[in-house]
Length: 169
Image: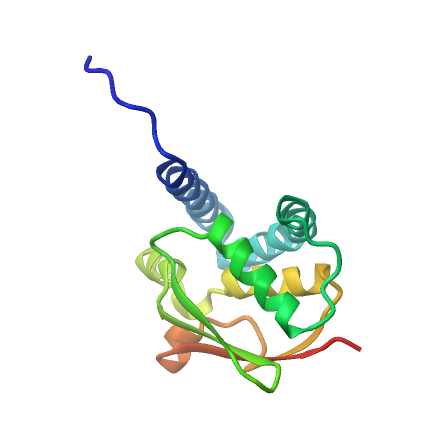
């Protein structure tokens, strides 16, 4: 066997993110097959809700973030956090506005595409935005997401776009 040079840090990150997302997809597919879409959605969202506060705590520690007191601090945290945990196959963009609001715009969604292949996209409850909601909750930031809810917007509305307003007290 030919010896291969060690992976650089970005290649290693991409490998780990892809492995994690594959595990997540296989877990969802197995639960779907065994228990149906309602249980798969419920357990998926519960797992995300359980993971979120732990993930935020670890990310804050890794990034040296104490408290987030304003939109600029939130933006810096979100951008740095997704730089760490995001994969090169994730195609979304945060657009930050001068009025302290933000829009998340997803052009291509790996979760949508995978769940659509499973044949249950009409009933899928979005885990991607649940992760964002959970991060904001764990950070103690009051927010409003429009549209709210958990449905897959790419499937139901033809585009995945959510607007956020934040209240830092």
